[in-house]
Length: 510
Image 1 (cartoon, helix red, strand yellow):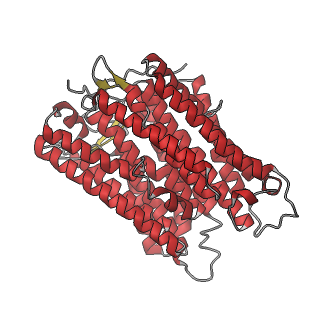
Image 2 (cartoon, one colour; image 1 turned 135 degrees about the horizontal axis):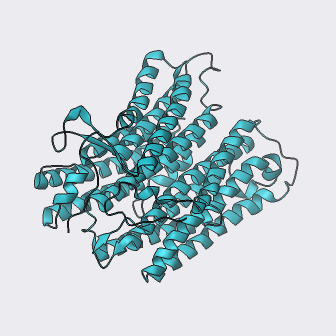
Image 3 (tube, helix red, strand yellow; image 1 turned 180 degrees about the horizontal axis):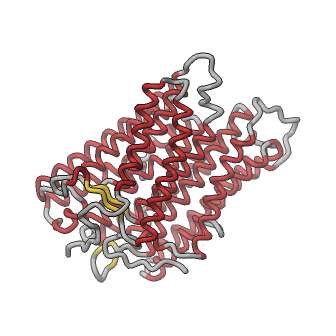
């Protein structure tokens, strides 16, 4: 059954904003290369809030109209031309990632301050350029209207993210970056081969057009499988997660926050586009259940390994492996046995809200862990005694992030899991509800381990290696509060996720 679409085929009012959302970060990167290392931070700190403003305007326009924004590049309509499109999923993710990147930029000022250095340093110059490149690539992923444009955006994201792992130049971080690069390139090759097969079969890669033509045949099935495996490798879904823990744990705190909160969401978002928009009727009940099984394995494996970690950043990294698993539980819950398709319903809303909540909470936790490491000179969990008294705001931010990951009210994680649990009950798939509850208990376990050590008094007076600026603590706390307050969207409509969606059936919570 073809996928009915509501996406317009001409530039809409406000469509030029989509171009601006991509041009701003690109202009920032180019201007930084010309201006040099002394000015790169100033450029980033001016353009990043501007980008957030553009994202908010796009969000408001989609919210006001209830329809997607479209921009036809060069007035050449698909399949000959390229279209940029922003629907409810796009704008929600754009605003979230812009907020996270802006807050991380404030946090990163102390580590990558270009103005305080007598000579230009490599790491600060590279960090700010890569941060803007990540921002631009993510906007392309959210707005791209065809699978090849999304491939280009995915590659830009990879080559911006990998160097963030090894900014300090240590041997172990270089090794982690190379492992990340190998997995990412493998994923890219598989995705590109899949797009080539689809183009050979249908002579178009435009999402709206392809969704009308795609049908079950061997070449199409092979293409979708290859693309999915490639995206799973980039997302670090179990068992393709091997690159994530060393990469996220070894990177500087600001880079870890970006990698965990932002970068892995790019390939996940493409997985959603692929199966919900391009081929919602081709996953099948067995495929949807397989996605759920992989998500379950990620939750259980990541949680158990996190419980055994001795270092705080490694614990958070394996927690990311576990939390990624929740995102894939929405696939079996969104599958309708009556229509044989994935539906844009409350299960999709819950999954995307989980992605947003995880982004804000996990960024806050990585920033808090970075401050603890800087203050103590280590992040050994067993030796965190007294840190809650020395850095109360930091530990509070870490704890609030954990509350959201566990799924306690009023956090965004609670609302996301509630929607997924409702979907599990409504569809009679109780086993996914058991998985989510078990995952919450595991998360509570490793959060209790960390906080129980952090809250006990130190055996001897605690001497901090450095003084932690209050604005850095405030940055971590602000994102934790955002994640916590996301649960309050239950007081108003959350059906923005369904605006401009094919066959949108969600009604939201009032």
